Length: 521
Image 1 (spheres, rainbow, N blue to C red):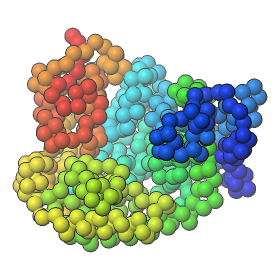
Image 2 (tube, rainbow, N blue to C red):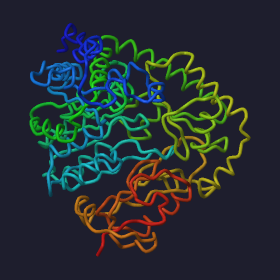
Image 3 (spheres, one colour):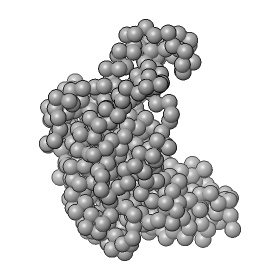
């Protein structure tokens, strides 16, 4: 049970304030000496108080000779708050937590089951560890062209085919708010004697409001990696690894976390995790209930704007999701002839509204307890202004996004999604004509391919070769190629089309996709 009286403590934040008030003469890093040597433009940009807090935990919060146990105490409080046995604070973001967890559960030649749309940090973890992935394909929402979740049945089929897998990874929530059925997954994966690990980077808040989908640890996960900075009040890069003893070697996990973290963690980042945790335990239900009300209001108002569409909570069934986080808003103006990139630029350069992300079709908006009626009204008014000023040009958008007039939808062909299941009816949307290729079969481990000698070839020349790099177009953020996979004609044709549409691509040396790096024969 959570000890609410203890949860009022913020040992790291208190120590940070104490140190700032001590007027200490410092002879440790960083070289600007609490801002005294900082250039004026940096002082103006970040402020004197931030520079005065810019030091490591061992330079003031903890004595260099005798630890006061502040970090251990803060991590124990976080573990209790999130329902875990242990917690490790991260200053390198959830990326380092995912990589540490992969290294903790698998080594060279081991097999782990992973979603095909995993964050690229998981693929990096495979490269570091030498483990072999068994990829499970997520559902692609047929009306929006975005990856949702890996359905439970596909995970279990992979586990049946690979009973010696060291772990099962899932991502929940997805970038657009779709949640996996973690409770069902935990039950079945544990029955097979395998640990369940959840990349919950976008779900640190779920634990603290009864109106939100269940969080990973509450649903029975063995490890959850979650970003305290994404939707809570942690500073950028603040994240945490949460673990339950039993199926995971927690000593090894601790060693891997330490191996991948900087030895000079920034004290304010650590303190921000401490304070965010205390804030959520004390007031999370109220804060997130208010945020949910704002998100619901925003969704309803945006849906009323002619030419604007917003992904709805009721569409989770179409996406095969176990839940949906309603504070994540995915908005499209394709009916107005605007790509997501164009909508993002119009919002940013006109009404001065900044969104979380944009892709060729949509923009993504975060709503949190930091929002207000005023900020939501400003977002809605900005979208309404754009809708009123934009001349409908859907046919022009179709020519820019792909084959106009097709009856399919992103990720579908003739109303059937890429897995042969009914795509559902989502309403009129201009198709992109971009259908993801059938996943290719690995012929080398990601590690072997990544460290092999490679050469750059034009796309047409690369057919039949083995990829030496990852290629991840957004949307939907599913790797088309990972190191060690055979390149097919279908893949190269898809990449040509993706390049022509201007999709953002992560991973390859050549971001234009004119060439690919392949394993040297």
